[in-house]
Image (cartoon, rainbow, N blue to C red; front, side, top):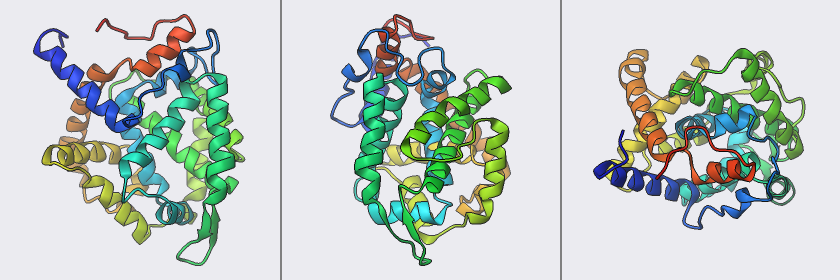
Length: 306
């Protein structure tokens, strides 16, 4: 699509509104990504992680999918339900989550390590309690940290490949899981799977621990119906239906998403793919991704003049 005239105005509007929603009104803090020159951070421009995490639609819908999948663990969901302000200010929670992922992916080594240390040493120690079933939980529990990590990266990868980005080779998928395991371990996760086969085995083995809770149903309903205007609510529904299509088959029914296989195939997937193309056209490369590549003396793939 051309970037002249009305198309340029539309692209600017979408880019601004999505950026404001995802990153908040505090700015992008590009200084976290623009220096020091030559510092690859935790991954660098030749990593699969930079490629996957630079994909706007894959990360947005993959992120929603990971929230749904994570909610199936009763202890992880209890922590969100009892300590998160997502009902009162869901955008702020989104901003914090995005800031962590982007900082650890594209930030300098100092920025990435500081983001991990902040969550590990200052945030997680305060998140603990008792779940409705009487079991204690802690955000610092290595077992729960591994679950949250695997649910996240599995859905990011699914989103990247589902919504139009070039398909990865099996070796590249394994490399993505191996790369992203390192920051998860620094955060406190243990026995982190490092290949697609290990992730599949992990998800199979953890399924007996997973079950739906009222808090999870309430949280997913809140996200699916989020929006202050009809347009915002329609966009949320399209993105959430696209995200639901990324979930493992066994995860959909417990979450009561209410979509038939036919609806997902003929309605949800085409709408989500169209939304993905629009997001990629409007958002890529993001200013953050551009700053990170320039820090390394490189040009982001797909960069265009604006």
